Length: 365
Image (cartoon, rainbow, N blue to C red):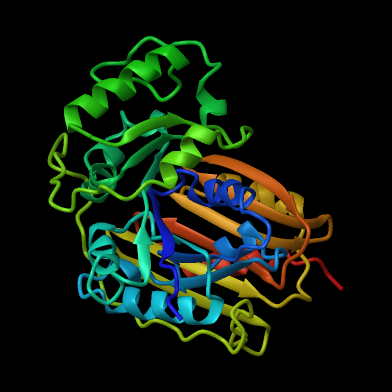
């Protein structure tokens, strides 16, 4: 029996660009009767994105690989993860989301190798970005962010709902402020694309919008990524690559059954990671832990960190918290197997102190 190669899209984007939200929108367009698989590689160690995407659809299999290891130059973690997921899920389509801090060129090289040439049908790769960040040197001078844009077949300017209706602001010094009006920001996007000589097809999108047919058709086209593309930083670069090779964890007995956390006596798991100029700190709390949502919200807002993601069981329901550069959003979820919170910062933090603060927000039984 000759199996049809699995249509595969690589979905990239820097921290907080909206990759998980976009994948949720893409899954909503899954044809009935098809099985789709999602391979998620987070920089952190505890795995949160699967909970944010939801797994209620029996036609969707989500596999998380924590630790940022898919971008390893050796390609072995990618080979193992993809091979396992294909064998277990037998999907009609595969979506791969590497860490926002990673360089996807090595992943594309692996997916294009002889091992997968008859197994995968590489379709257009897509890079999501928040246009408001293009004037921020932490992004515009970051080698990995620029490389993600360089190899993408599709460039998706996301979060349009947050900038389209804003009034233009006067530029401050040599940099445009983040709160640009829609027209002025579109001009900045065009200038950035021209300066970087990006070849990807440009689309605009907001999470409030359905994915239009033209974008879906573009995603179904064969990949044309230029693996020899070289990014052109707009300066010396704020962060430098410091990638490590992290151990890949085996799949559980069932493709949609997550691994059982190795709880300590309190019902807590703590894991940390560092690399790419960043540090991650993550906690998992047993499902019988109940948190005070109002206190948790205030605590998160007060943190000075690059990124925070959380799925927390609270006395007011299950809350998904998502914060990037001080912008915090909270959504209600239907279900969660436990509570998970992960922080990414550019400077080392004191996890013991943070943990004590989290423990203080537990609701008394």
